[in-house]
Amino acid sequence: AQTVTQSQPEMSVQEAETVTLSCTYDTSENNYYLFWYKQPPSRQMILVIRQEAYKQQNATENRFSVNFQKAAKSFSLKISDSQLGDTAMYFCAFMRTDKLIFGTGTRLQVFP
Amino acid sequence: NAGVMQNPRHLVRRRGQEARLRCSPMKGHSHVYWYRQLPEEGLKFMVYLQKENIIDESGMPKERFSAEFPKEGPSILRIQQVVRGDSAAYFCASSPASGWYNEQFFGPGTRLTVL
Image 1 (cartoon, rainbow over the protein chains, first blue to last red):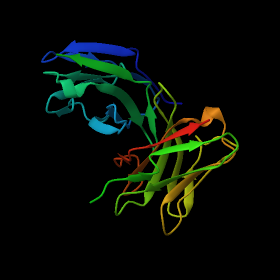
Image 2: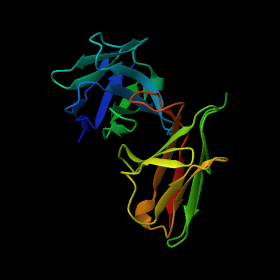
Image 3: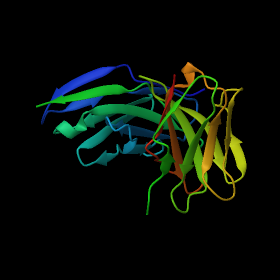
């Protein structure tokens, strides 16, 4: 069975600085997708970035980028130039067939 | 194009009552997924439905929980004889097709509180 582990329950960063959130996963599959979702206090789930396992190039979306290490089964999220609006829970998720498997989340607090 | 809609947003039930949660997928989406988020936890998959069919219910509790997605109307997640442990946020997501990748678009969730 696939599992997703986020070992950092809480992180904090100062505005304009860079922060990296960690995620590891376990699977025997070769093709799959990985995601980072943001959940602000409104509780809406917002897709931040996705990575296709068969692509070696790390995905980037504006200030958000990932470091995908397939052999190590690691998928970290880097947020550059952190903004106050980035304060939220961040969930790493794995998808092989239709269902998403989520980690337990990292609560990120951005300080002014 | 309206997003995924869920109602009610907040639902309060007493122990033993029934809870009905509704999800209207995005226009053109025929695949619906339900997830549950217990306090301070990540989302856990419950069930995946297509119109009139349950495709994967591996995450559904064996008793008291059921889901449907009729030909017409929203998908319904039904919880009978609710207990305090059912208090959680229930999220619905939809996608336009199946397959090992189709982005799932999430609704705002229904927060169920059982007194």
